[in-house]
Image: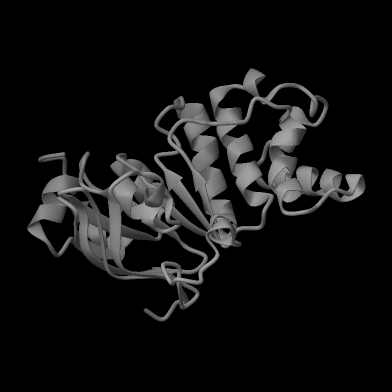
Length: 253
């Protein structure tokens, strides 16, 4: 791969008790591109992306082996700062999860946690990141209103804005559009493409059309294993593995 690598997994496996969710996945994810993780339900997609910021550790009996390198450093190393990791590798979940606070306080939350308290600077951060999430024009006149009053699509863009406010390197998205209507989905997809100019985006999706529209690269997982990985166009038009072809064409999944 000629593109700089932002995240690399080496023989990455995650198990929960006796259940091995992902098995020996080695994958190089390029910087400033969108990589889609596809595969049928239960194949390990969410487990895989959660391993990229150690969120699986929040689950009892979770065990991770292998390496995940972020800019060449193993995030599972003994001295790696997990709090900083989750700032550098942000997560957007399937269902929008804004805090029950104002729109302003949602975006300012992370910077405040990390020590930013000057009013002028916080205002700048809030405005900049709401603009990055293409939400500023819709909420600029009601920043003190509750985030819970926003529509589902607006809440998801607010969550993206909140993640961006702490200046991450990588943005993980676990089916970010599955709870949204087609119009809200189109806005998120357009936003993902724009964000990839400045961030490395890794998205889990069940939607083959969405993967084709937004992703530069696609990884197909099946039963916890990486079956195929490559550029989106070649994966969809000329898959090398028969399983990949069957899944993409809807024969199973």
